[in-house]
Amino acid sequence: MYVDHIIAGCILVGASLFISYLMGLDKEREIFLSSLRVSVQLLLLGFLFKYIFDVSSLYGLMFILFIMTFVASLIATSRINIEYRFRISFFSLLITTFLPLLVLIYIGIIKVSPFHVIPVGGLILGNALNSITIAVDRLLGEARNRLLEIEGKVALGADLRTAMASAMRESLKTAIIPKINMLQSAGIVHIPGITVGMLMAGADPFTSVVYQLTILYLILFIGIFSGYVMLNISYKYILARAIML
Image 1 (cartoon, rainbow, N blue to C red):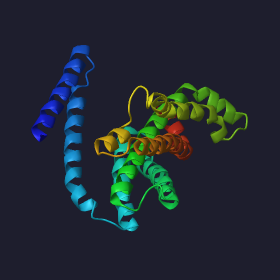
Image 2 (image 1 turned 120 degrees about the vertical axis):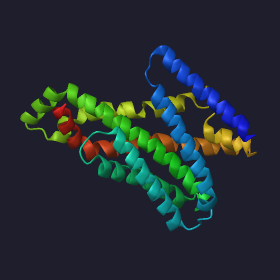
Image 3 (image 1 turned 45 degrees about the horizontal axis):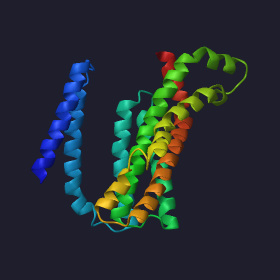
Image 4 (image 1 turned 90 degrees about the vertical axis):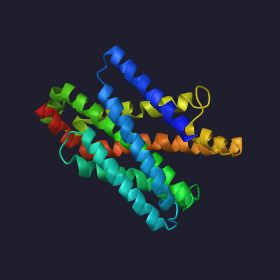
């Protein structure tokens, strides 16, 4: 069983490498290393799950998520080139991961169980990570293109936050485009992952769909909330970086 999965994975990665080479994308090394890294990480995660799923206390589960947030912040640091990028990323991810998760636990949608908290927390964290990196990257480009406009507004008496408001708005729009596309295609173009997983596990189809809807709305909220928090914390440092480029 495992051998079949390994062979299938190797074929898919090999085909991706071939297409990259054929099209001259110059991404072969990145694809190979990323595929290797995700394999190691997921296999390690599968091993650690044996111990993680023995944790039953809320504090223990929050500590595990704290470590996951720390690692995600390191990943964000490698993608974001601004001053204080680690602490900004860590603070943004911490807020946008823990706040919604604790609310879901409080209202009873998520149970205080490793089988619920860790997967949903990881889902929130992964989507927040993608949103903040996209938002920062877009705002950096917007700040460079609108530098004279921003300087002009500041010279006329506007504060920096107001001067950059339109650039921040465009950046946040870009960050949530993948989330909106996901909502538009879910159920018609593709069956989302949570539904597939629950159906394969033998869950009731309607229950699976209702749970998936909650997750989809959660992902949408995380996309816009995390981008909003990150941009409002980091816009000064992003502008400083844009000026240097």
